[in-house]
Length: 281
Image 1 (cartoon, rainbow, N blue to C red):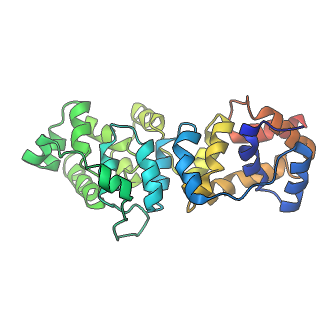
Image 2 (cartoon, helix red, strand yellow):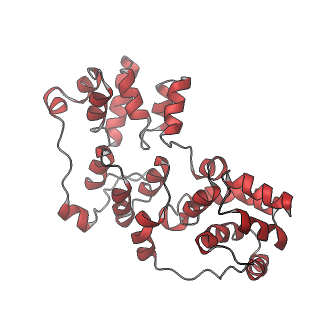
Image 3 (cartoon, one colour):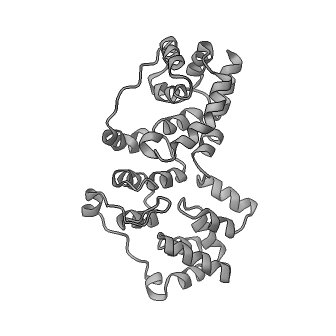
């Protein structure tokens, strides 16, 4: 049988998690083409138009590569209201762990865009006072848009330790993908608060995305481009899924054929898809 062409890359990502000789045999049985060489720059150029909706944390994984090409992709993926990350990209802020040197800015972004203006309130009274007097979500988001460098996050953490920041501010900052996990934990936990963070697509890492999110096809489309989007972290997703794939699919051609049939309409997680295909076969 032949897998739907929109699913080829997704199934291929899972096939890469088993022995290569077994994967080649399964490809022949299922009718999947061998992976074709791809131009990295061209693949990145197509990303904004070829991906399903991304969890916001995926933007951070991409920014952590500190790659001007990827930063330009993130720029096109960001919601218009996300002025903080736009400031960070245009200022060359590094996101990779331990990196201190500024990141080169893509020439198109550098020449065609300017950083959003500093909010009048922040310019007038300063960042921390502006955060403290934010009595609405709009005001909190406006002030929080000026928090985008490591030293800004440190300032916020110190201010919150001295005297807890308003709830709107903690909310506005916590749903940002670049909010340090330690600061998010410092802000405290509450059922509604945790729900807002999850709803914003804040994840611990690619492994959580691989195991807990769906539909499976959308997740696998993103993960199959992990070597292009976030190569430094893509192995986390592969390591999380490899035991499931090997245990429930392995080199069983029938199980892979079932998976290829199910993947286009399956609404559960990748793990549920893998286990269902294995059980049916």
